[in-house]
Length: 68
Image (cartoon, rainbow, N blue to C red; front, side, top):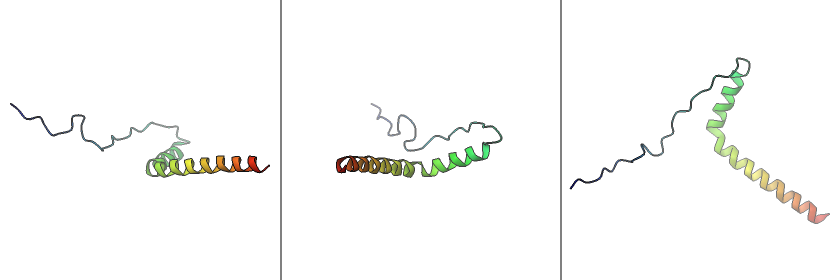
């Protein structure tokens, strides 16, 4: 009887596939490229900060509604 392979069935786990670049118009190509690079490196932190800011905004609104 043959032992099953220990290799992952669905390929390498934890390895991200390369992101395909989409051609943008020449006028905004530089801005779009910089924004894409920024989001690729800092996207997780930006998401966490936006959730924190949204939570603080909601709590502040509730606080001011209770006060007045």
